[in-house]
Length: 114
Image (tube, rainbow, N blue to C red):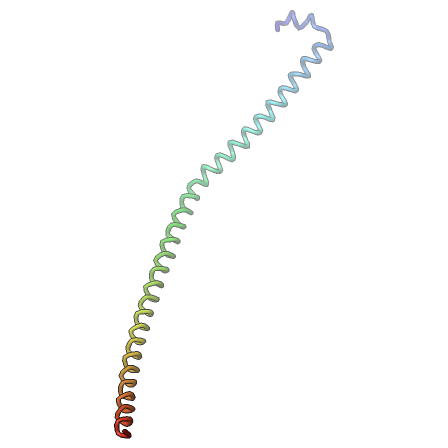
């Protein structure tokens, strides 16, 4: 609007226009605040991106170490099982030998009695 058009308006119309301008100004200020908040959040996310990447690398190392520890533990268990099976086989073999000797002795005693 031009100055002449404003001069022709009634006072109530001017007040309405001023009110609308103030209302619009408040809306724009609120939008600016919202955009500033979003911008700050994005800045924080960007600055934390490095921290997140470092955390991921740290977690990867942690998982690798945990996997290696688990693999070592399983290898120890397998070795223990193999050793236990070997000892068990030796005990069974020795028991079979003793059982054979006992049976042989029992058979001799049985043969002598007949």
